[in-house]
Length: 131
Image (cartoon, rainbow, N blue to C red):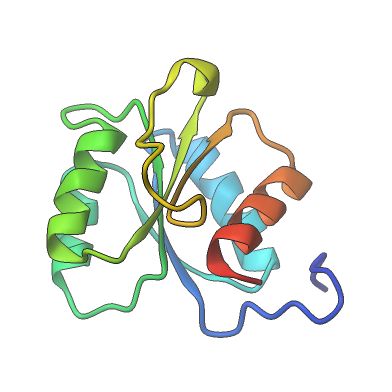
């Protein structure tokens, strides 16, 4: 049973989740799948880039800012070289101190603070994906 607002549909929408903490990744996948999104997960940036180089359909890249080796912001830059229209949702425990490009439309790049509630995650993802 989904917690989606009446009339909202996530059918066919997919999210690439990049999170190096296995526990956080597992819980976030569970929440997103409960909301009927298809989720592909990666534990680090290089794995995410391999997925982005494939022909797998991805509507939204949700990435932790503090990834080892390559930051979430560096990953987003590389991801947009592969997929220029990709929407990016950053997650960070320090969201208030993270600078994101304010020149982009609000539904193309956004940030959510960790820890986030189910409602906050649902609302943020739905607003970015137009649900």
